[in-house]
Image 1 (cartoon, chains in turn green, blue):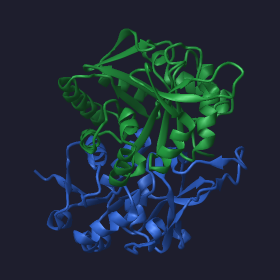
Image 2 (spheres, rainbow over the protein chains, first blue to last red):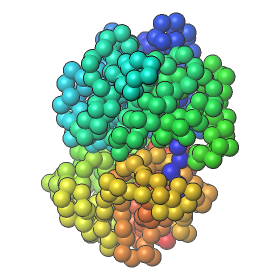
Image 3 (cartoon, rainbow over the protein chains, first blue to last red):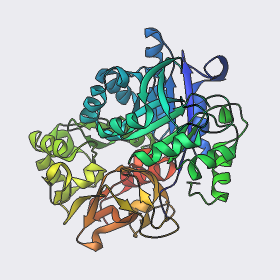
Length: 257
Length: 220
């Protein structure tokens, strides 16, 4: 008896459709987000993360309606991220039915925003999303830096220091994406995941790179993550969430089945 | 229309959307779910839910400022009342959160911090350091009560909390949880039932618990 490790399917949504690009380039259409969310809910997903990659204002309105529609039919925790920049953005998403909001680049421009958000809404609904890239050379001690703009723009911020700072500011969870691995399907950056998970006292969600079920299990056992996030292995019907959980359970990982 | 009313008490502490949507989902349209801070509506309701998110000091000060403590005290004597998460904690004597906050004292016991250095004490993970908050799906060992109807014992529910209820009257514990230490996952007496987890986010088992609540007459 104990806390189950979580599997979180991720919906990258643009203009009301689920998409998933390989390293944010080759975008394939994976369907209606409400239908996709319901399917994962039925398969036993522990949570759903919804990342809005829409840029336009019109698209943001669509996102709010989509979140509302999901929240009316799916009764598991829902995290919404992408373009969360103000206290009003958070309030709008929570009012639409989100349980948590993921803050990414807005925290880099203004770290105090995370503090303000956590004080206003509680740490339990503030997730700090970190996009990390390895910057140390082969043979050097590991070092990861935060990148913005889909991995194109370096910030000079050290990932581990940032994760500690943001959780001290009140973020209740870390969504950690390896930009080196994202879309590559060769597994999580295990060293990165473990380094962050051991540095902070809040749950860490490993993201970026899942290509098979063993990668999910490795994120937990090797990476010490509390939850694992994946998109494409579920979207295109390669695997169900239930299969993933059974695979993890066979390796002694506690899951909710 | 002879529809019943379920009042979800809104004392300004954020997100009540999930709780009200989940209650509507299980109500079969014979119960009207109203999110309200109006004491008259709460008094007229057949079932009352005391939710809660965020920090205890803010919760208690809003509860008192809006007079919710008085209406809860009335409701607590007369009709089925469901406390959820901080709503459960608010029913205890006292909470350690925010350097100590006096609570509503409907149940004897205190709300305590899991601590910054929580170590698993039992099972296969013994000795492992645990993250705080306790976030995710954990099992609840049930103590016989109509609120558990049609829910398998040791079912998992979704928790997110850093403080837990330590009940002094063990007979009032209606669900046992464990995360590094034992805590009360559910507590109940007469027409009050309160849970630390979020039934509105706990999929089939959680929805069943909410359905049981709407069907519950407030007797053990």
